[in-house]
View (tube, rainbow, N blue to C red):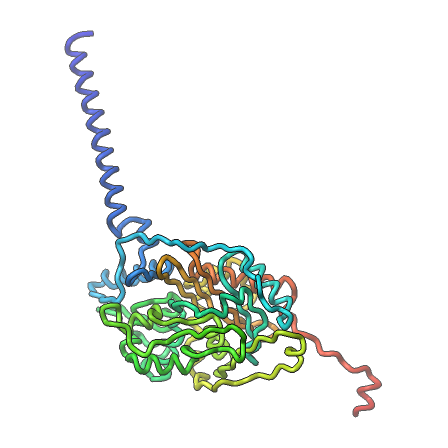
Length: 415
């Protein structure tokens, strides 16, 4: 080989090595940027608005990120009360558990509803509660230990109480455009469907803490939801506003931070929305005699009947195209209205979905509440709710019960 050929070979190898080194440096740099910035695909999917350890679920976070991006694209400067975290949150709790029904008292429950709830919940660490909104009877309560516990942060389900308060005070209607910065506006229907945090922070600040607390208490937060239900513990609504450094009343109205809500409290509220405004004491019959002698007990009548059509579109929108659309993967036979919620605290993530369905045999209310790690979030609770409705549908549970008809002789005699 000539001297010039050897020199050419060295040059080519050198160039190749330089190219590989540059590729390695570029790849390393890209990995570093991916891990340390919010521009990566993974960060866009998982970054959440957070204070301390509380985060929003990825579905809500993506929707909010789009909101901010949209407003910035128009030259707006949207200031949110929530903050992004640069830390990848670690969860110590498990999303799965065995023996969820251990210790449940079931003789007075509807066996078909209970079986459907157990089937839908599977081995997810959570509870499922089904309620007849027309009388406050608990039809089934799976994992009663968790259902009757002190509850947890309500996450975005708190938005239902804030929406009703703002409507009652005449601050907005469902189609009122609320300015969230610059030229960006959002209506209540859109905000409920997509669980927009900035919108409800704005409403919360407009209402002020005292009015927010007043309506939350009227809707049953901060008091027992059940009537003589053994083992029921009390959720807490604080007497003081969250410090401004932690987001203030805006944060309380978007995530429910500093609030503790039980599955029964959410169930009683959703039942009142479903039935037109009657807040029943929830009752859990423990025997067939309790079922036979059941009498509804009204806690109070809420003046929300004119407001319900104002929030129903948003609640149904959540299922049709918003944060609860995962429900439709399992069920779409009749309309379902609901609200998701996802947040976390001290390594445990919470997933909520409270809903009611317009069935051929009347309305039914369900609350799915999950605790755990990364697989636990509001859309998962909505998905399980869809599985619950499907299980009941497959068992023909929603076919209207036919009343026995007297024979011709009896009819003639009565006439």
